Length: 393
Image 1: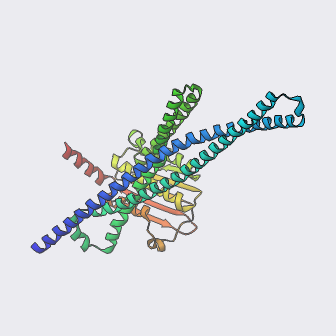
Image 2: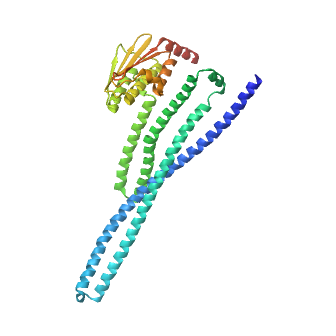
Image 3: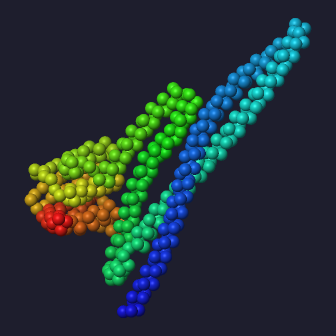
């Protein structure tokens, strides 16, 4: 018994050192990613200013080319009718032509240098974006490792006694959770985070315009800033809805489902119908969230895999049970081949139903669509909720 305890302690010490090392590496990668983000913002600002300067130099070069042609033409006229011009006029014409040629040459050189600098910045920006992408992938992978390593060591003995399926299932659930976190992080990064970076960038531009007394241009930029901020607010509200629909608390399950199906139909171009078989009623919050998430995941699977034209959600309330079904007219699949591929969506739904002591049935045939039937008992869950409330009091 003592030897076993010592072995577990040694293993725990090793795990703690490994976790500390992984955490330090993760922090360093995150710092690299943050520095890369800051540098990319500065490069974007410099690129925008550089492109504006290139446009100005091109305009100046075009104007100088016109003047240089005129000066050369004047020299040609003098050469054809030399005796009609005084020595002073001839000298002035030559000096103007020479000056125009010098200015044109300098302007072309400046344009070439600016273009080279622009190309160099664009190459640097591509390299930095590649660094950001790789660092985010590494951080995500380390997140999976950290979640696995930080599990309770006391559960190792129990895990060793369980079937290999349960062990693999635990890893798959961690991966599915990490993928969901990665999805939310990506939505925030590609939406609000990019918009906020753009807002900061354009704010600096507006500030420079105001300092240069370019009021009209600053007003245009401010209008763009306002539109960007509104778009960012829409993105944030969408992400919040995906994490936790506020309408569930305010309106209840059925109105929230109606609203969700309207958006689903617009986004995926799949006709979506909601049928309520009995008088709707409010359920406890945890059950409403669970039902909504199960329906949401079923609809996501339909959009991703079914190639369906129609989908119908049916829900019925009884005193002790809430029954609901999601059925589509898509391509279906072979149930016998279901275990040959990882299905994180189905696996997550089964785990959620198991926790709620409910039932789930999948009915699908190739070419004939798919139907998912769910049943969640209300009395047990309400008793659990009442007991929890009693303890909190």
